[in-house]
Image 1 (cartoon, one colour):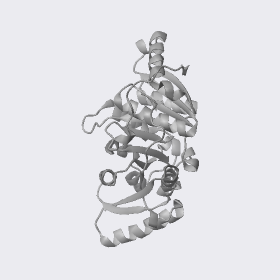
Image 2 (tube, helix red, strand yellow):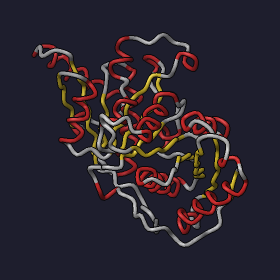
Image 3 (cartoon, helix red, strand yellow):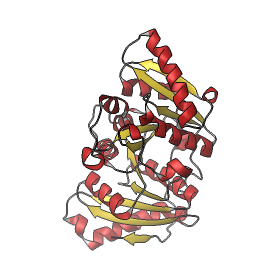
Image 4 (spheres, one colour):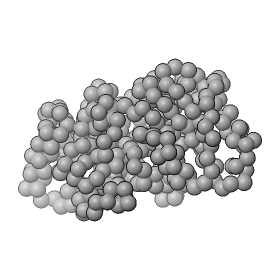
Length: 312
């Protein structure tokens, strides 16, 4: 995998917004990322009709929300109002304006949030669906009603201190690992790399665990030498459940997963990323294999071996 990316190449950040405080916190996170990476901020709001008066009102309210919640002058933000299906329109606009990352909201499940969902929540908190549809990275942030995103490290400083990355050695997961390494390096934090083995037969054997750990060790290699810590773990069970167990047990504040272009195929990798985005109580960064911006793609050559700790 070589040295990986020194820093994520984020030039355009897109925040889909609802015109309530629900999206105010997402705008704050989006503006934090723009400042950290020197990027431009874009916002999009989707209406379900084409009434001109409603569009004009939406533009005015959108500018007000940007001014009060993002700390950015609305004149420095490109804002559009579109009509149609939110996920389709957001994905189409992200492609058109060449977004590098979408910051989307996702409603916490009732067992976590204990707040009844509203129609607006369901319509605009489209993070998991965006993770499947977009051709750029999607940061899905859990939200609670109109109170906005659950507090996260990125909201305060634009960095995550403990990143958990799922790796199954597919091209999509290596793409995700490249992003996770870059984020861990920027934060001088901890990167936990998780490989999930379905079932309990071979996956539970120490010999199999050792082989996987050595493969992860070789894969990460030189990236683990400077500025951040790395540890690897092998778990058995259903991928989503096992990943979320690691995140919760070890206090991860970001889960990074890869997704293949599986529209219409029901691909397992994409389903895992989408399901995790919908269930995690921390932000989830989904990195598509077929990224529009290939400058963010991973270098696929394994690095020289370097010792990393193995948590089992």
